[in-house]
Length: 450
Image 1 (spheres, rainbow, N blue to C red):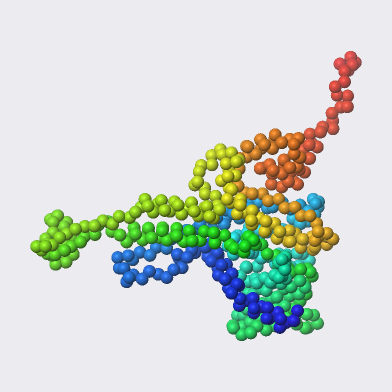
Image 2: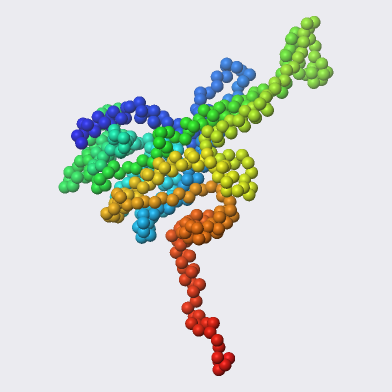
């Protein structure tokens, strides 16, 4: 592609209203996940407006973080099982993903819930395939205009330091074949970043990559490009306001306020002295002393907060641990408790299943599998939820002869690795066969050997 055309595309997408709105959404979701809700970022109260109301409590509640953590651990508390047809290939993929895969998956899901999408970059380093999470704010994707919405290119923009120690902004434009790099200082027009070794002492601003596709994988939170916060942000803000206002009332309002009319004393100190010493005060002919006591509607606020809490779990599609006592609930009751969370998590699972398969095909391509683009990939997700293990095991034991041993073992609550468990079962079956048993066992014994 022509360099001028790439620059035009970068400027067009970087300055678009869509991208600016997306950046605001990312920042908002990230702040609420860090418990920096809107109430903490409002301007301070102006005390001169009402000198009797000086308290300015800012109580921020971690509702968004709670609901996101619930969903992420419900979906990916355990690694999804990957099956591409053979145990040998499964092990190669597991080795290629490495020890950090589970942690990466949890971070991808958390970022997607906060910012609507997370991104994974793949590259080759030291003869091995590597992958890493790229901050969502750094990525501007370019999709095709057809119904498939394929990823055609990725613009990555990130702050950096040049060789001379000067602050700058670097740009990368990735397509299916190459990567171009540009650099910008301040607000000046960005220029080619001639820092890539092209061999024989020459430098260039682009290099070719071997993947044949854009080496970035998107992990969308849902199909509408939204984070989880939009479902309940207004309710969370109202909950914060109500609690903070209640705290302000308690701090500001005194138990008793004296109203003095025609007081015959000289100052308030004399009034308090007379009241404590003589249990009386002097007033003018038409004077009066009255008291008022501020009443805080505690019960009304408590009821209102309870309704807000229910709404947060309802519209946030989460599990309210205070809703009812779980006890020895049946599997049906527990599934009903998780029904809303299951609906929300299923939307994310569908998106992530497609993206994980793309990553696996990158690995298969790197392993020189000729069927990398067509091989069937089966993912099994293990939902991390409270279950009635006794009920599940009873159902599995009664399923013998109805479903296969593999299926029953796969769904057993105590099985984490299916292949490892099946191998162990075969080993134990072999150990039970005693080779020292005589072939004459059970035959009638002769008198000579009696």
